[in-house]
Image (cartoon, rainbow, N blue to C red; front, top):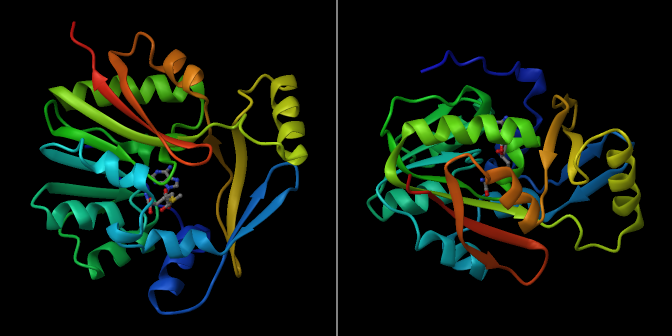
Length: 250
Ligand SMILES: C[S@@+](CC[C@H](N)C(=O)[O-])C[C@H]1O[C@@H](n2cnc3c(N)ncnc32)[C@H](O)[C@@H]1O
């Protein structure tokens, strides 16, 4: 396993936000895009702690595809890991936020580790299912990085492994601030939905990172030749969707 290069405490804005909510504070999530656009969400932190009964239907349906040993990438406060652990699955939740991992452990997650997606590397046949929920397909960051990591995930999973990944179709919006940003991205040679941003919470400022939102066609292009194939899409009522991705047989 690669060495964990966890972030500095002052950079753990996501974790501070999760910690504050865990401590009972009413808070919101601030996300700053690299063109200065700011979005504020009150449902962000609340959703990270939500129980199965309150999840959107597409998320609930996705859980039916989980099998065997599970790796939850970017587990946040651990809502999916905890649900699956309770169902009897062997689950490891990882997140690059040390504070989020602390909250997962305090909430009862037995296996939780501060580790970023870039550091994920396990020996062959370590997991049967990888979940990337809460739009975490976007943690792949870029076309190139997604393919590199998908190749790595291929090596460390079992023969019939599944990746369950959620994202948002960036084109399903009429918000001019987003449509303009996609044009700006295309001009600088990035994918339209490759959003560069950072999370802020009080005095904490996260590091800039790329958040990759893709259409279904773009996702299939990314997967092409990686040994992974979309088996099924589960749509939501809006632009979010979940892909059930299976290891393609040789
Ligand atoms: C949108 S939240 C989703 C949390 C959780 N999956 C859920 O649905 O409630 C994204 C999570 O990814 C984590 N994260 C961000 N960058 C990451 C990285 N490079 N590696 C691992 N986790 C990361 C954040 O700390 C945060 O907890």
